[in-house]
Length: 179
Image (tube, rainbow, N blue to C red; front, side):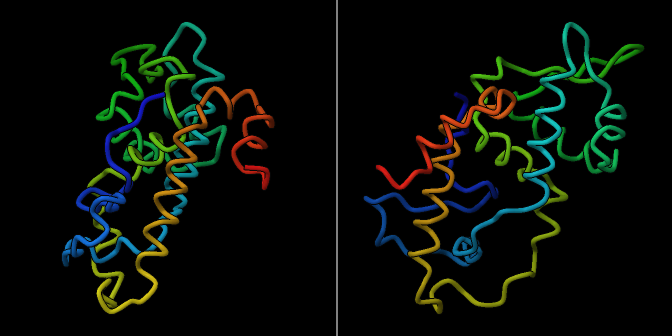
């Protein structure tokens, strides 16, 4: 599956790995203690599932996805710009244009979709100035960093194909208490 080489879905934010746990978090990374589960990621996954189901041999217009899923077209355009930048979708211009998957659905992880959707200028603007507590002042920072990393590690193991096929066995294997 496609992973994007960073753990946090937000540009400029990294989750220290075990070797770097003692590395100080900079002011630019002060939001890292917050687990980011946004509607943008949920809508991006929903749109990608719709695209996978509907594309057949032709590109799917975003207006069709917007109408079926009741998501704003301009919002979808912003998300798909990030998905396109990360190679998860390809755009086709002109009459009959739209979007197709950039690779096979079994090669695209859910985490990659969320990361790409969150990696857009509008998503970044929406987050500036929303957190006032610096991570060095928060005693639970390492807990949230670890949880955030764990969530994305698990979501990297779930493919778009798994979601489209509604493969409960994948979810049970990853999220059951028997591990």
